[in-house]
Length: 137
Image (cartoon, rainbow, N blue to C red):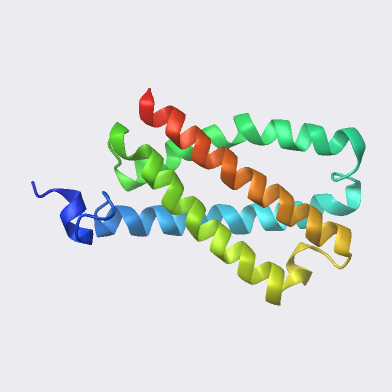
């Protein structure tokens, strides 16, 4: 079997199929998160203790999706961190585009847009950190 890194000139140790699956699932997870945050924003999810709970729940809530991406992309244990990073890269790129050109995706009020953007950035960091943890497992 060929070295997966050779598919990208040695830069990314994922095959083209693995990279595509990680990117596609990163995009889907981002969209689901954005729509969920739009729905939850008016319920006060960004206020007081609710924000703390939201941030804390993202940690265990992300773990199953790391495993989903790893399984769907056929990642080896040594590829989980880069797969998570690749999916997160896609999500953060889409989030940047949405925040700049389609802020209504997150709700009409500036606090909902800012709150959702912050949560998605936090989630991206958590996702990459968990990818690293699972990579080392």
